[in-house]
Length: 117
Length: 110
Image (tube, rainbow over all chains, first blue to last red):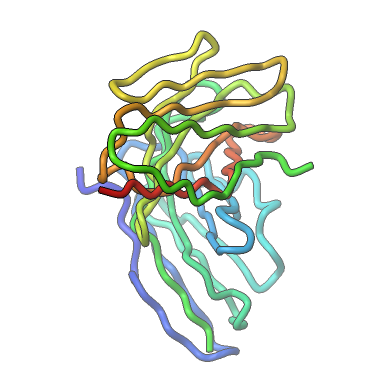
């Protein structure tokens, strides 16, 4: 398997523009996670899905952020409008089960490095 | 108190040294514990799970102390390739949620 695939790898945009990040999880994994990583706050969970259904979105910073998973092989994280403070590395991860109960691990994509000017 | 706390380092050690990292967590109900490794500008990758009785994987040993709510990682005979940031990870309060520490940076020098 190719692993978790994210696109684009890098995104530079101007404040106010819409940004869409994409993720293809590992085939057969039922869980998909979106994280954001910054130097100040470390790695933060934004939202996660189970079988394409959002389970916990309490980490989504505000209404400008939205995430969808229309099918088992694709998810998007959208920021509209983007702001400079959204600059970070955004990771997508997938897991066959819940690490808390089955000890299944999360596999991370290479990340999208977002810069909002 | 932060949910998962780690000494940020950096730990600068010579090749062959033994180095230990500690991590504390706040949720006494946590059941799953991991160490992830993250290389510079790369994604986090699982290094090892941490079991109640402690576990070893080659040069790496992980220990869990539930009473004190801390986790440790010991690296023996450190290699240049061990240079990375080591993230302590604990399952959170909601099902499926993993909480990552900010990581401890290790730099192994020749």
